[in-house]
Amino acid sequence: MPVLISVLVLVGALCTLDLILTVGVVKRLREHGELLRSQATNGPRSSIQLGEQVGEFTAHTVDGEPVSRDMMTGETLVGFFTPNCGPCKELLPRFVEHARTMPGGRARVLATVVGEAEQIRPMIDELRAVAQVVTQARNEEAVGLAFEIMAFPTVLKVMPDTDGRVVVTSDSAHLSLPEVPVRVP
Image (cartoon, rainbow, N blue to C red):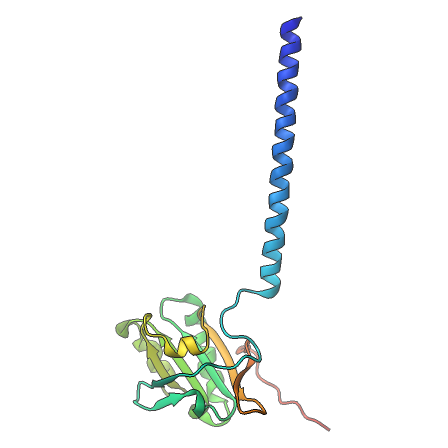
């Protein structure tokens, strides 16, 4: 009989330990769930946000034209791409098509392609007709730093505000949807 009592006490202790560990795991899962929900709601930051000022930058396009923040005097479409990114390859044709419809044409579109020279050539060729194209190696990202780029692809619209500061007016340009002008009566 003492052996049976010992076995029952041991089983009870193991069940109690298992219950304590299960409660701890459930608590951690809830914490992780809340963290994931907050990230999904806010979204990971891929660049400067709506209303933030674009940083100073100076660069030259693949055609040798100078570009800088000060040259953005009207609404400008800005895109960042890299050849090793599947979503970049999917978005690029829509970006090009949207760039064709930008008022002001090529002067109002800036595309930055980041990567090694031999890999970025096809993207440059596709963008060159509709955008001012800047290339950057991964270690020299002047334009990327000005826009605080942390993910590819990133598409923004920028424009000077009433104080003349170039700010982000759209940080989620939907290139698959045509823009519909709003008519004010």
